[in-house]
Length: 141
Image (cartoon, rainbow, N blue to C red; front, side, top):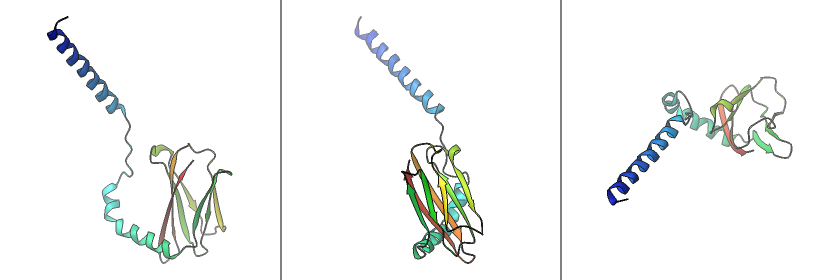
């Protein structure tokens, strides 16, 4: 085999490698964090205010109990409405929401036994009728 054939063979193998990478990349699913990304960006100051309000009102806590496979939310007494979002960064199809009714117990418990292993963000949004609050914890199952 001479140098000319070897060079052509290297180029063909390289082109095949690049073609394989392009094919695999086009088959990869990419989930956006949010469908309405730009609208969320415009409302970001409201989110900053919710986080600031939650820092000043520390009566709400999120605790992950790994040995009991559950997440416990200590709810504030002033809560009038609230929502808990379990957000999975790697797979949007596994995200789910838990609504908290106005007549709520002191604690809300969510089982994690059926959730996929990996990284989760637990987002807790609530309102006392006058202000809105937001708290987020990252858990690894």
